[in-house]
Image (cartoon, rainbow, N blue to C red):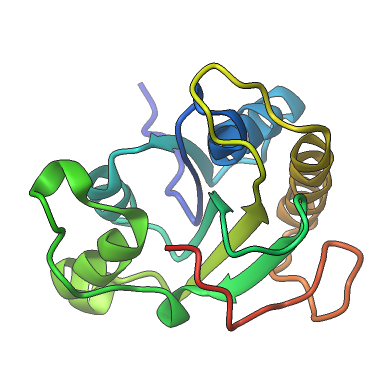
Length: 179
């Protein structure tokens, strides 16, 4: 049996599928899976288990984390932020059940050392409704489709998964604080 090709790009969708717009990340991963991704791309539904994100990064050269944000801008706004701008080295408050993906980035940098991915990028989709049982709002659903289409195209083109500031995918807002 042949070994699977090495993962060059890891796309992790974080969030809770049963809490409205918080499902943006896992929904995006599912939409990419439905479209199909090239060899070397691994899709992970990171759910709400931040620690798993750190371990999933092992072996990847590029990581894209997608999650919902709540920073007070219009629902559906997309922020693209370099991972190093959001990594958090503080231990989780309340124990490991509160371990978030931003803490996972900091932990992975410590854990993986020289094997930490060369490129880590976070895409945040501003949410509006986070109540249990709520569906994605229309604005977030549209933004998730837009981000999925852009990532899918770039993954198939073999290029970087980054999008320049001012692109149709939304502004690069390096000041976004999604925590």
